[in-house]
Amino acid sequence: MSNLSAAAAAVLLFCLLAISLYHAFYIWSNEQRLISKLSYRAKSGWRYRLALRFKRNERLHLHLSELMEALQLKIRPGAFVVLSVLLLLAGVASGGLFFQSVKGTLLFGLLLGAMPYTVLRAMLVHRRMQTQMDFLPAIELFYQCYVVTGERQVRIALQRTVEERRLLGPMQSVFEQLYRNLSVRGDDEASLRLMAASLGHVWADYFVNILRVALVEGVPVTDGLKELLQDMRKARRANEQERNRLLEIRVANFSPILFLALYIGINLKYNKDNSYYYYVIDPQGRDMLLNAMVLIFASFLMGLWLSRKKM
Image (cartoon, rainbow, N blue to C red; front, side, top):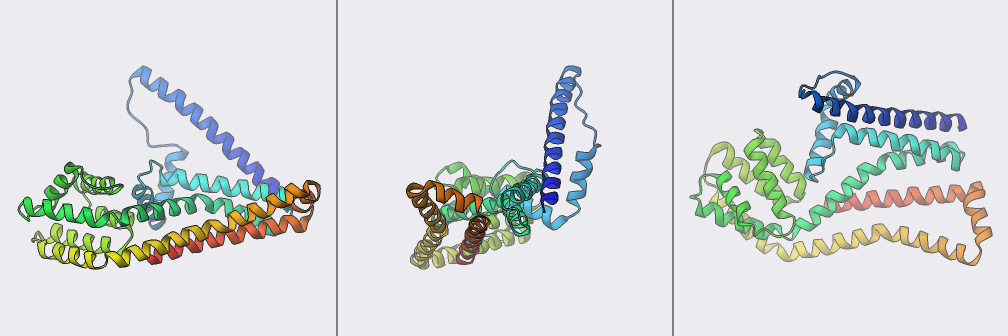
């Protein structure tokens, strides 16, 4: 297992060195391009071939692209995958050196490798919770703008809704993103799917379906918007109760970390030498810490899954 960790460390160092040299050469070539006033960028090299090969996996590439765009992050899916692979190698290398077991090497590598995607999903859940309470006022404003503009053009109503600057919290950026995508993207279905993924609740799905009907068939959707508003007003109290449950789930996600830190902190305060021996030197102590990290990570994933089901 030490050979596996050493190999992972060597691959990690090689990848970091290659990335550093590539970025240094890229900066130098950009400077030379600016000096010579050349704007043509050849589609060749290992980076272009790697990105092209990754795009062949359409489901993974589309999923990561929509996730990045829903969070409005300027990170390419290929760079995100490279980061996850590097963290996986770092976890395998450090896990083999610290835990010195097959279980520790593989589990710690998987934990670090899955950490970037887990952080993105947690950010998405947090964003959905922020927009959940502000969705009803946003739909009310859009309904008013839609009626004022003549009940014909959804894009004009979206433009007026965005220009009003009366949307609360993150809803302003969500509607701006939807209007921008519908205006310049050219793929209405992908734009609507992205908005539904950004909000992540059943009311957003209903609203997206109404917009889809208006964009595809070109018919007025005033009655559908009115029914949606009436149903949302009736369900406001139930939504507040669901929001409280989601808050309880989020608090429960972080409670194991607090208890573990409190337990280790008390032991370190009263007996540093024995605590260091049993947590760092003793193999059973390291295995206990690994099991705790795996259980905490699993509880965090379960909390994210429950939050997704509650929305």
